[in-house]
Length: 287
Image (spheres, rainbow, N blue to C red):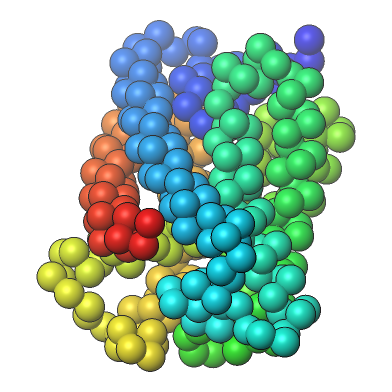
């Protein structure tokens, strides 16, 4: 067993470094960090499964019925008659979204990694391949298909796609080198970036809920300062929180553990609210 394997880092590992065993008085603070991360992940799983339910119930079911035109009712420039390359890109992108979300959840569950390593490896290969295709088709749709939103939003979407490609390469590189601690850190970053669309939707609906209606953007044109902000924030804020979490895991400071645990509890509550509003106000009415 290598040192990386013995002291691997996962999304809610209570021990990120071998030195942590030397500090017994950190047990409670590390446990608080572990369970706060577990709570957020549990909330996220519920929200992502609801998102998958929406994708299958609306997009996939419409396609199975031969009614691709229904996509355009909720997705501007969705299915466009005669645009074979564009339609292929968007169909591929949307169909992959459901499988990517499910595969990502399975990759992040430590019990699956421990008990079914072969499944974890094959699921990871499918996950990475699907993400590369989804990121590429996403870039095509934004820049060659008159994607919804303004130029700033297109830059935000492009940043997300590029970061996905970078993190995919880094996660694969460290997996092949059997540097499992580094691999899992890059995989965690990738998991968050891969859910950028999901973060965008629950963030938008949380914002609408607390403002009791659209604020900072025009719902008809889908442009405005808030949408420009969230187009970048849906990638950058999760990454920033991830880096703070990883550093909190590595820290021996109990105040850092408790501070990060508190942050994750707040994020669990806000994520839960965004998920509820998105499901009730955006996804369920279309099913």
